[in-house]
Length: 314
Image (tube, rainbow, N blue to C red):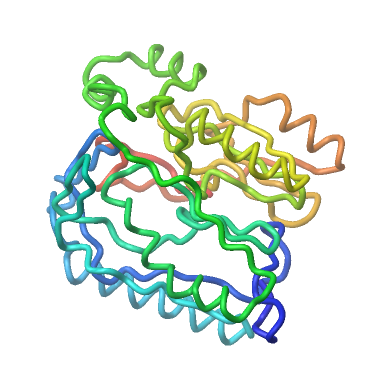
């Protein structure tokens, strides 16, 4: 993103160009929602299960994120911060109600910048349905100051029970074998149905006019089709990829990261299995390299699905 000059603020095509402007979230008011059909929140070992996150944890996160922003600003990067909404309250639509919302720490999950456009993505978790509101003041400012900025919002999903496979998390945690989970992963059968388009921005990696998109538990087939049509009309190409070993795939940046033009790093534990990715890299003189083995293995206290140990990869 270019710094404000009265003409251009938003102009971002890839993941490696020098950073000039960035949106950073805030941990203020973050909450731990209850599990629902869209997410299995499972955090008993961390000492909390529902409601506001512990004050000390939030303060530590604030200190780290504030320091990160200072590092960016010291290097001349313009930093825009999210504006938190009150998450410790009920949220509802005509179809459902949740006791608390989630937070506004990761704008990468919600917003996808491509060229002079920022796309508000659908999200697929009820507790995150209103998360886009934390970034509306920033987008309003951009729209007022940048006459070329395109502000696009994907169709807002209803997220009724019809959008989720019944009893998915119970079966994942208690019924399916490892072989069955792998079979479902290869068939792209996660907890989302094809009732409506659903996708998180963080499943995409931008390579100029090529966008690599991960088929995952938060990006269903209809969502990928919507993205392909939307960006195809703009002359962009969407390439769908998958990675082995991650039976509960969620966001591409734990699998694949472009480091600079011509060099891309992948997670060797969850290796890519889509031939098109390797073919695309070879055609364009890109090198795919595995990440180094991790030094530290940490015991996850608040996993996405149940407790698990995992390496610190990317």
